[in-house]
Image 1 (spheres, protein in one colour):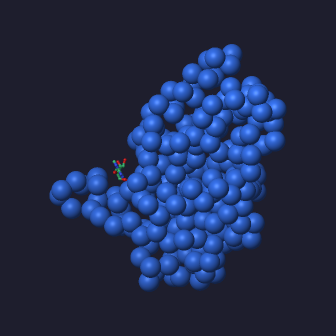
Image 2: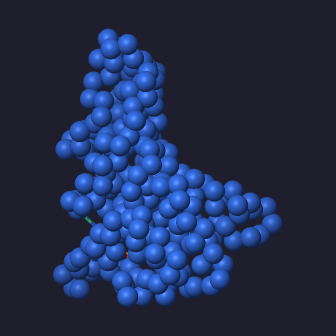
Image 3: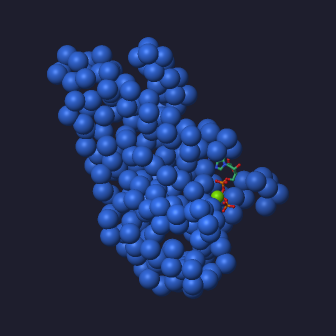
Length: 234
Ligand SMILES: Nc1ncnc2c1ncn2[C@@H]1O[C@H](COP(=O)(O)OP(=O)(O)OP(=O)(O)O)[C@@H](O)[C@H]1O
Ligand SMILES: [Mg+2]
């Protein structure tokens, strides 16, 4: 079982050879009073969890933006290794706010950051969704526990919330935005938020209180360039 699991880890690492894992050599752990079996099991689970979140279009996504790379590094440095497995787990930390027009690569960079953390091997039980999907999942209807859906995204140690500001504003949308961002803000839970709302429109589209919290909790990263979907035609 461990050989198969080790193989999964090796293949994932081989696909991203420029990313240095936190535990390059599992065998060394036993000699240092640790538990390599748990380390291998947990590291494989980290990779599989992230793989399951990344849609096929972004399966090769990799961070290229220096500011986002620095943010991932800071999270890795702030993570705490488990005493026995040595596997690092994400703690509290700063967030990032990726801004830019459609097609510049916000979603790609964000999934790349999740991927990078998983190849490094940091446990962070991430969640990822477009805000419009979160609204759709939360819409009160029979058989749906809206609060449980909310808590899944609010409580996750790492969350990627894509396309904030993309939906038509309503009181309900504003309330969900506020509760979600406020919870993550107060608990200092690392979050990647993306938007293509223009800086001058943030307060109007997201509400001043949401925009204010994001400004404090997250480093703004403006991505520039053409719409990659249109290639040279933009
Ligand atoms: N650095 C990159 N290398 C290769 N392909 C990329 C890169 N960045 C983005 N792409 C590709 O370009 C397309 C657009 O990128 P992406 O979906 O991340 O844009 P976006 O900024 O999130 O756009 P929107 O605001 O419309 O959601 C996707 O097909 C994505 O895979
Ligand atoms: Mg996108």
